[in-house]
Length: 386
Image 1 (tube, rainbow, N blue to C red):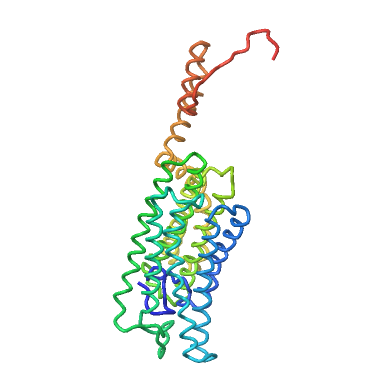
Image 2 (image 1 turned 120 degrees about the vertical axis):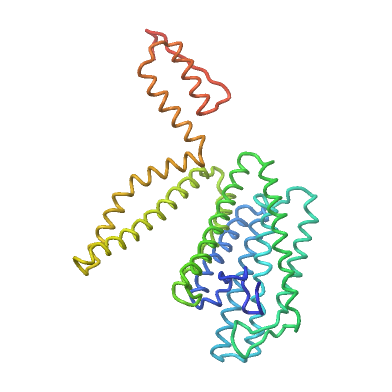
C-alpha cells in the first residue's frame, strides 16, 4: 500500500494518483480526471442543485487537485532546493488527500448514485461508518515514516516510527467498498426503467476505467518495461486519463433524460475492441512472417509492411461481421434470436398465400421479437379508400 508522505499511491501499484513517479507526464495526465471531476461536478451543482452527487464530484476533484499540486510542488522544491527542505517536506503532507478522494468514490458516491440520496434511512449508519474509516485511514497514512517523494535525505515530518502496520487500516476502507457496491446493486433491482438506465451508464464508465487500469497494469509486466521508461510513463499516463471515464459517465447519466441505449454502446465496444486486438495481432504476425519469408530475397522490410497492411485491410470487413455475429450470439441473444426469426419469416412469406395463416404467423413473429403487451392487425377491405 502507499508508503510515506509524498510517495502516496492510490492502489499501491503503478497508477500513481499524484503522478510523482512519472514526472511531468504523470502530473499532466492526472489533470484530465481532475478536470473531469471538477467540470462534471460544477455542471451538476448548477443544473441539479438538489442532487448531492455534483457536490461529491467537486470535493473529489478538489482532493485530487491537492494531491497533484502538493506532490508536484514538493518534488520541485526538494529536487531544485528552491525552498527549504523542511518546507518541501511539509508541503508533501497534503498529497495524503488521495485517501479521502478514493474513499469517497468507493463509498459515498456509490451509496448515493444516481439521485444523491441513500437507498434507505437504514444505510445512514453505514455511511457514517465509511466516513469514519476514511478519516482513520487518512490519519494512518499521513504518519507513515519514510522518504518524501522517494528523494534521498528527506523524511515525512509527520512520520512516526513503528507506524507501518497502521497502513493496513486502508484495507478496511477498501472492504467498505463492498457494502457500497451491494447498496448499488439493490438500488438497481428496485429502480425504475430510467434509473436503471442511469446506473448502467455509471457501471459502464466504471468498467471502462477498470479495464484500462488492469490492461495498463499487466502490459508493463508482460513486456518487462521499467516504470520510469518512456513506454512505462505513457502507459501509466493512459491509466490515469482513463480514470476520467467515471465522472463523464455519471454526468451523462444524470443530465440526459433520453439516454442513449447502453446495450448498443456495449455492443459496439465489444465488437470494435475485439476487432482492434485481432487486427493488431494479425498485422504484427504477418509482418514477422513476411519478413522471415522475404529475407532471402530482400533486406527491405517495406514490402512486408505493405503486404501486411493490405492483408489487414482485406480482413477488416469479414472479421467485423464475424465478430458482430459472435457478440450478438453470446451476449445479446435476444437481438440475435429476433434477427433469425425475422429472416425465417421473410423466407416463408414468399410462399404463404393463406391470409389467415399469414395473420397468425405475423402476430407470432411480432410477439416473439418485440414482446408487446398485445397485438392487433387491421386489414383494409378491397375497394376501400386508403
